[in-house]
Length: 211
Image 1 (cartoon, one colour):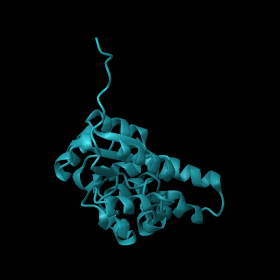
Image 2: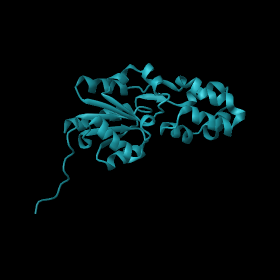
Image 3: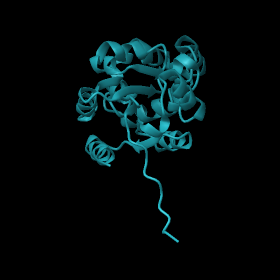
Image 4: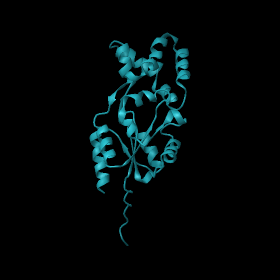
């Protein structure tokens, strides 16, 4: 009886990129550090309890920004001025592109691969990224969670991306800096890469394309 072997993965012809943390360096700390004058404890408290990640995710999932803003001000009226800066000065949360990853994206584009993006992002702030980063125009389509009311790692958003972008998951490499998101994508058939840096991504892609 021959020794059983696992089937080789399908060849990759499509790349599905996360944006924040993979191509765009985004953090509310970039904005609010300037308003706390080096007081790290106060900054940490503000971003943990006043404007926490869980609150931001509700807007990534489709809650209108004005509703989220009103909720936080009602809960923390003493911080109203700072809370309003979340949207009034939102572009300052983007420091620039993640080093090296845009070069990888450019090379994939030049080689003719299909390029798409799937991002957890508020529909009310995504235009800021589009205005700042020309490389977002390189994607054939971008699925923005806040526009469709679905959010990673819910498997439903990956199924939505498959339909909207006409993806064949087995031939698509999904790249995200969250292991929860890559694990979820794998359950619906995507090949995946947990992003920790451009060098490792480049090595992973080179190995895939060499097989």
